[in-house]
Length: 624
Image 1 (cartoon, rainbow, N blue to C red):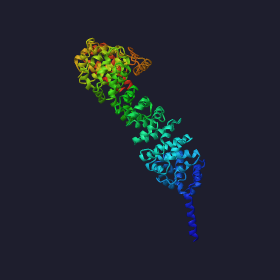
Image 2: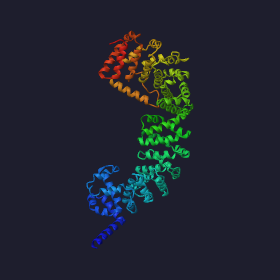
Image 3: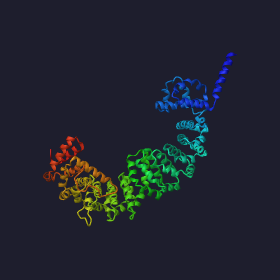
Image 4: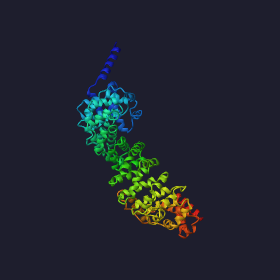
């Protein structure tokens, strides 16, 4: 009887402790958690924790948070922090069971019932962490009735509590329509929208993230968010580096299936801010921004597409197609294809030089990307307005630069060569070789190089014959040779490349090039030696001139500075193609010695590309 009595008393005591749910014990745990001697206090009170089963989960949460901070470990994968606990023999089993359990008989919700904001902050922090784990955790938290209290914290006097509560709501709303319904029923939207205007970027980020997830699954939710006035505050967050990913992601979903929201977003001036994220945002923000811009082009809305074009987005979009992450590339590729018709519209805006520039710039960058894109540009009718701009004497200088650059990139496709011949492109390019604008001249020479880069010489005859026009009977060949002596550094490179290709196959073209005086300027290029300081300075000037989108005549026109290794290789290759017929003429002009000197220099520098090139040239010239 005595034994039975003792056992019963012991069980009664355990049951009493297990059913104790006053706030005082939660505060004891909280104070221990933040005590300098937390480890000893936790060990000393461990028996009490074991007896109080209702608080084991809260105990485990506090332990997890402490070890996460002290050991800087990720506890989510089988809780490695617990394995490194100094007293792991004492309490790993109960802690593990509590942390892995999806049933929460005692959540930090009790700490929300106090008037002390410290407890509010910690409770919201723990709930955010738990909500970020698994769907089971999120269901348990919502089932425990925490949503209304989290919504109340969105207007707490503590900014930390606001931020953590918004973060918890964001996690709870992830991929769960039922949880989202609970959150909206608790009237969270007005408070989340208000939090978008917080002076704390992290709070803005969490609120925007919550709205993003809330808008992901339901058109009704999206309408409710718009009606709550979220659109403009989200747009205002786009320049915010901390919150821009979540803001752009929310906007992308809000405009997805609503032309009204799309119009409102465009009219609010969001497009330039989205393009700025593409230029300078981190990859995650870029992907969300690209997704939003893509959604603006899905319905083929002229106003939306014009806004993207006017924001000069094409250069950065094409760049992201080449160097962006997989997600960014996918969004950018879809967007670009939707914008081709708007590019052509801008090209045809004869009275608006700004639109013409933007259209030509877009075509230029898109044409550089790939063969399919070039074919799409041609099929949409972009070639004729480009040629019309280049033929006109009244076209603005910057438009001439971009249009000639677009033509150069379209010429990358040899499959378009016949169309170029029949549509008069060669005559236009020949005229541009005489332009006083160094960039236009460079682009024209580059277009000829692309067209002539054909091992079968299919279009060489056309280039030489059809580049003549009524007022320019001499055609492209002598003009390219003239550029070798007088053009800018980059134009000389393009001209040398075109001439090397044009002299590669047909004897009649080799003879024509010789008669036009190709040897002397090629030898001059091979013999040129710039002082190191001059070469560096000239290279910088040339780079700035080529990168200048606003001016077309600021480059170096006739200086011999900054000749690239490629220019010399092209010039040497052109001379090689004249051999063996013109070996004596080349040697008399000093070409043989110049190539020998370049080969020796390349061998000393151990430059394989230069060594192979100049070695082959000497071999063709019959030299050892």
